Length: 209
Image 1: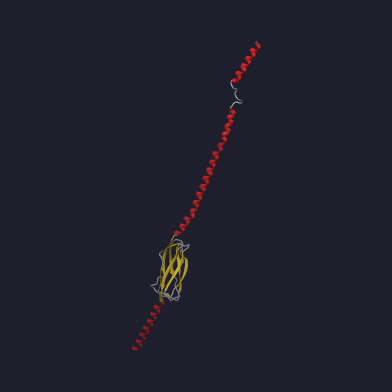
Image 2: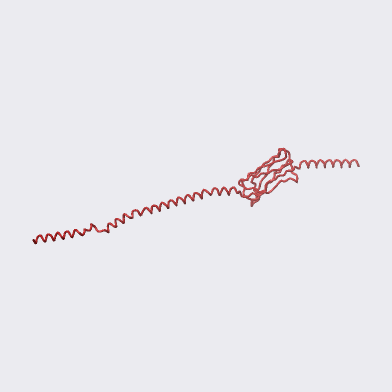
């Protein structure tokens, strides 16, 4: 009776040890680090470590919050390397500013331990590069406006030149008017009437003689 009880206890202890060993062997650890903030359009770099076998591959899913819930924006794969390290690069082009969540996908063949980091949140901010490009693209418009203003100024200058040239015809009209106002013919000199008078007197004297 006593021997049977001892055997039962021994078997239970062995099974417990096997269970604990199997449990500890299957509970893999995986962790990762990433920036808390990234600008839209930049490359988000994530690096991590894991006790999973080298060559193990899984992925990460990225979600953003919307009014109706969460919207998945990307799924990025990664692979555990020989040294237990892994990394991933995520293109955030087109991502709107807001709060995002990244989650490591679970695998049915490998369970993750409680000390694993499987989810994190981060913020995507507005790209400053887009603002710079917008300002740069606006600059040629300003130059065009200045050019158009210069062209307009030249046109106005031409108009002034034409207006200034127009009065050249005015002196001719004034000359004609002056000619019209001047009496026709040239005034006789005073000596001509005097000569005629002397001639007449001379003739009268000649007749009287």
